[in-house]
Length: 158
Image (cartoon, rainbow, N blue to C red; front, side, top):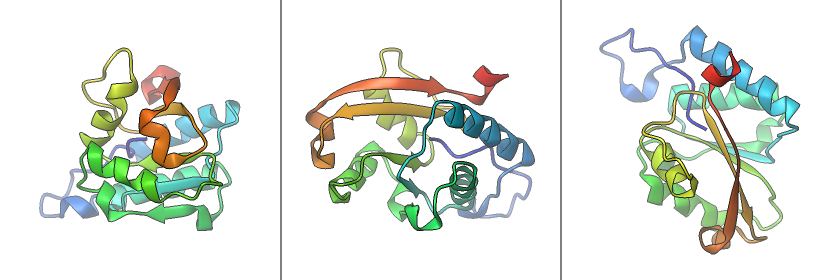
């Protein structure tokens, strides 16, 4: 998932500290409704600690009734490229079946594009790409078969 729409309203504010816009929160709640209808509830959420991503992760966790203990922050997602996102998967516990990453462009777009038939120029804010990997080992997902379950943007939901 890409973080929700954030504010550029304070020119002197550091990029890391930019908060969400109310519009971004509303669009994220629309995405939550979609995820609820599909029965999606990740066991773990790993988010960038940047304010806009962390707020998005907290909204998602609350909306999907995910315990705070299942919400983690990883600084490598903030400035990472797709390869650094991939590294996160090597340390995941085997018993974990589902995960949601919340990050930033261009890294999130670059991470999902190899799995998409129709590549995306830039994943919109609050968008989710759900990929199922056919393996029981997180460190094997990049050599396993996969299926794109869905791609959803807030604008698709009205």
